[in-house]
Length: 146
Image 1 (cartoon, rainbow, N blue to C red):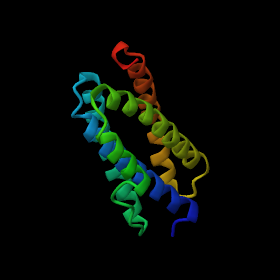
Image 2: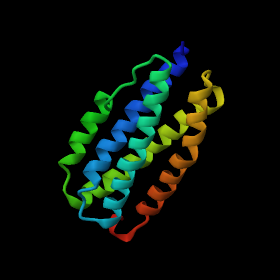
Image 3: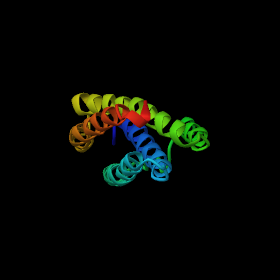
Image 4: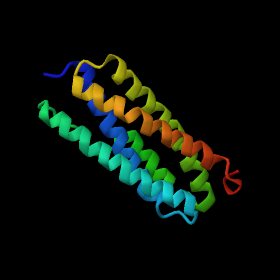
């Protein structure tokens, strides 16, 4: 059986991953090609992470969440009504915050998780989340997003 900490990690990581996919789908409709590309990348990469996490969790007898948490759903709904450039700027800013939280979550699990498979998943995820942060910081510097 998974420890409470590992169960909490599964729940938080799954909800976070589904939030990334949902906002990525919204970003994939942006008029800005760079935002569209990044949104599509988020849908692809976070969907794969979600699937891998779900597979590990189910092997451990845990059913992970299959959607974002309520707060993320509400934030996404609000962002979806923002016009063009306002959405793009808010998306990048919001994604930076979300990815920094996810990075901390993964680092904590990689260091102090109890389950070896979840620990390995987190360790493997850290570089990809860091890459997303680097890409977001580069996007934020683009002239059209100032």
